[in-house]
Image (cartoon, rainbow, N blue to C red; front, side):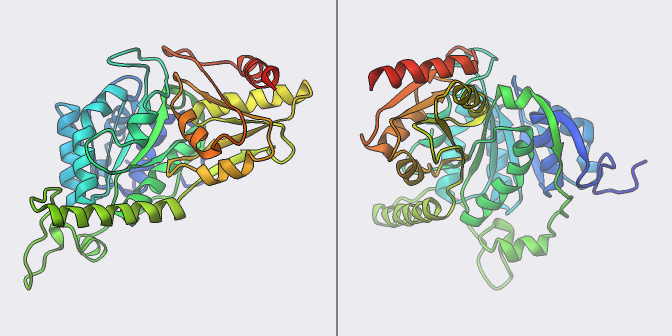
Length: 373
């Protein structure tokens, strides 16, 4: 029997392990002190709930793991758990996340923290079980109703799948806002070495009351219970609530932009890509430089807030920008807005679950940027 109740498999923090991205999500959720996971299986992310079922954290840390009857049920369970100040998360893939959009909008309106993992597959509709990045708009534009945003983190490795769970919870609670880890079938299914975070203890009820005075369990005998809702019937009150949300989003834009650059200082051409596409683009950059093309890479890590100012600054002295995505062209719109016509911006993408190869990207740099100079 494992004698350390906070360490499900006896793995020490700092151990180098080999696992899938989906499995890393499950391990990290336990280790970051999550109170509950509520989800529903769908390819290509089913290993998240399968791994949690295998690890049985309810016997070790007390974490609740429940397979809901549908994605709609799971998002409403997340709403309830978050309303009680609990660290709760769910995971799904593109069609499943589409079903959750109403609940995510409710949580944004009620200012509730929760974490959502989307391991993207091709669409529209049921589409394919193969990888895609075609949920960019769904995630960064707010797929539900109303004026709201979700904080979106885009991992490009199994290590970041693990790291971003705790970061997503940190940002969600800091701003009382839903946070999403926007992965894809490549990162979810691939196996890499990963170092898991140290085990955090789950918070006590008293700690939750102190840290989350707004939560349903935050009431005290001397005051009325907290009401968690996104409903407001008085338009003047609802306008003030919306203005408050917009001010919060402005603060997030100012403080939480994250990105990574490679060899951009001397680059003539800039590739912008996120997630698994950025991994492929990194190899394309290496091939291009071997062929004498000075190509750099800009990887947005937060898709919302989008690093628009940083892209605008880095692209100033470039001859052109190529946006690489595994979709028909979504993030490219944000890049064009950021660049604002200062340099040419082209797009290269593959559809239907087909993942581009590095040589295709180098060819696109030549054909879409160099030949149009």
